[in-house]
Image 1 (tube, rainbow, N blue to C red):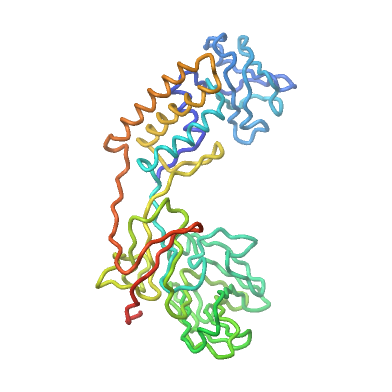
Image 2: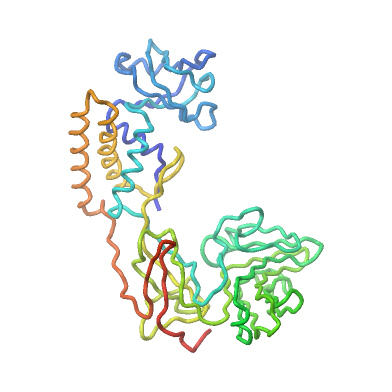
Length: 428
């Protein structure tokens, strides 16, 4: 997906407004940081540059992102009203804008919001597994403190987010065990043990290993009674390992364990733990509103294969992934390097809409030109409105699947999918 930084959009808005200049200093300014020397500035009308804004864009410079108002320009020397954070040396990139960049940036973010849903971020989420009790099952969340969120490291393994050896999504869990014992990642969901005793608990996980008898999965009932899957065969392939057993009457937990023997390495991806049916699922918070499409993985052994909508011949099945598709607003731009998920021609619309918001903001800032800014704001909003109807600018509208066997709901805490049909009896 194409992306555009806030700095680029900022420059595009300023260029469309007129008075945008991009240069680099050609020698050092004064030690106090109030001057910038750039021979290229001499080609511009010095009188028109006063009261415009200079922004340092040189990556890594002490004054990067500093914004100062220009007080005067004399030949190749630009003097600013307030000193930069440090002396501006030679070869430092900067831009000159007709308005304060904060106003431009605020206008861009307002435009990103107001262009939704004509311009949106497509969302495809495959984090939900039918009847699963675990969290972060594909290890897609960012590592925190050397551990995958919701998982606990045991015996001090080195755990990282792997982005090359991956089965599903964008990353898997890599476990490198130390020499002192088997390294583990564990997760013990909160369960009502009085209800599930006597039920069958099943833990499955896709595992990759290049050596036999090094990687496996386990279920721990009480800290000492543990059941195990077979070890991975070590054939350099992703294998779906399974461990299953009846929850004992004296169980104190149902803990899922991913394990690698001492001094070895294993990879784990897409796992799930089931102990009966789960009816209600929290939908991804990345979605704006309810999803447009909901479908289910057709083959338990093909997480990256075909997905089909629920229906009479495609009822919920334990262990299958749910694909949730919808849309969200573009990412809010909070820094110069932050990116919005747009490219041409959508950024043309965002820039035009931003110009409308910019002059709307300037109405309250520049009272002397209030009427002029109000007229400009209306003109650019009208232009943007016309662009929203152009083929190729407005992104394709998403349809919707008719719910079958489930309902969607929401409350103050989130949005939910709840199944109203029982599972198919055949479980792969």
